[in-house]
Amino acid sequence: MKKLSARRRHPLAAVVVLLFALAATGGLYAAFAPAGKAQADTAAQSLTIEEGKKLYTVGCASCHGTGGQGSSDGPSLVGVGAAAVDFQVGTGRMPAATSQGAQVPAKKNIYSQAQIDQLAAYVASLGAGPEIPTEAQYGPEGADIARGGELFRTNCAQCHNFTGRGGALTEGKFAPNLQDVAPKHMYEAMQTGPQNMPSFPDTTLSEKNKKDVIAYLNAVNSSGTENPGGLSLGGLGPVSEGLFAWIFGLGVLIAVAVWVAARTAKAKKS
View (cartoon, rainbow, N blue to C red):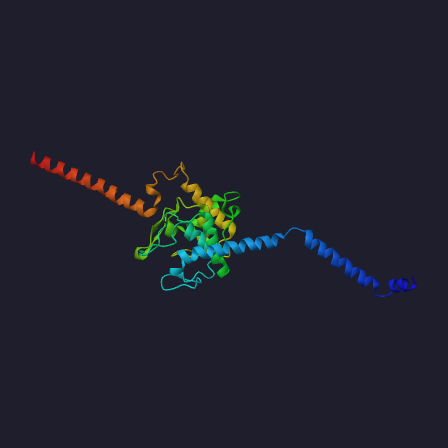
């Protein structure tokens, strides 16, 4: 008893007991606690990247290189981000056909959204880049349509025209019609700048600005929207309207001139 009492009074006795208690608590927690959410998320992400790599090897590596480093047939994908993949593959532009013109057009998508997510995860793992936006970023809630119209006319109308119906560019290139483009893909295009389009990162157009632009395009291109200017002439802007005036306006003037000349000649004969 005296020996036990002496041990209890030892200066290190409290430290030993505390360490033993901590070790026991940690062991019991590790044994009975469920797997951490972070670990599960990491495992799921790794699996998604692995599946994306398989899809990439089959459908993309021949042009963009086995590690996304690029080649003479395709640019590097390091740092383009998941948003670029979601846009290019989701709109059917990628994989591209073997023979292309001046610009890769949109076409029917051959991948499911789950496969696109896997491809995007793999490419994102090659280097940091823009992420796929959430619905809260491109949805209409809280958007300012009038402000979006101002931003669109300032930054985009010179190529897409003022209602987003598209237009011709140089050397056979073109700005596509935005009428049937999904809001998510509009956001991604502004964020990543595909093909001939400049990119508009958040430092140039904020997240709220992008939301406003998308809301404006949805408003002017929605079915049943009235044209406050009268006949829209296809919504192609001043070029089509000027052409309409020249063709029909001058046509009417020529017809009147011919009629007057014919009447004058007939009057002289009589």
